[in-house]
Amino acid sequence: MLVFLDESGDTGRMTNKGSSQFLVVSVVIFMDEEEALACDKRIDLLRTELGLDSNYEFHYSRNSRQKRFKFLEAVSPYSFTIATVAIDKDPSKLWGDGFNDKKSFYKYACHMVLTNAMPYLDNARLIIDKSGGDTFAGELKRYLKNKFKTDESDKIKKLKTQDSHKNNLLQLADYCASISNRKLQRKSDASEYYNYLSHKIVSLQRWPK
Image 1: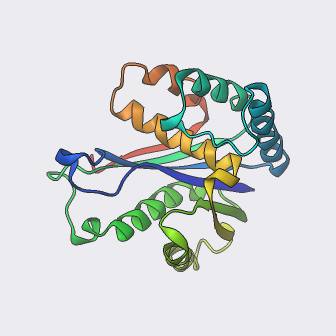
Image 2: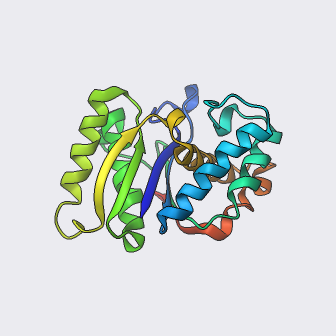
Image 3: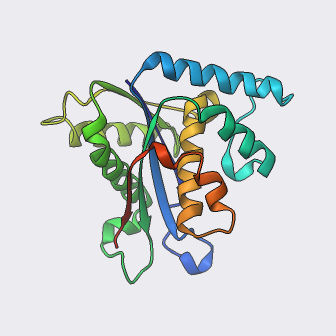
């Protein structure tokens, strides 16, 4: 089993000064590693079909509308499931000093989405987008290993971080988080993208309510 985690939005709390309303974290779960490999290869082929460089990164926020639909059409036939947590940073809803520390906030969001995904995990290899540099990546790995080292020890077999531009399926996780974020913001075109993924979603939590 392979699991890929990425986020959309940011950990800033100044939503009235440019920070995102939501921090959205998604995990993409492939029960079958062969299916994950096939999806990975399909994304490689898509680059060739679109005349893109072999190291081009599919990133929702930077992609054109046309590229977004091409990407979703390419990946949607494959068998994977999605779990997502969206944390609403509205100051009237979110309290606690920990949310004012960007690193602590991100760690907490990762813990939330993985907790929700636990019923679907079994000896998973978890790959997380490496954000914040090597030092923070190490902190995040230690934090999550500590959180899940007891009753859930058989759920996550291995955890590593990787740069998203080197991993097609982290790019897929970026799309899942970004499309969920757009849906929550009720963007006019959100449903056009969301319809490609809605049947794959096993958990979608908006918190706090």
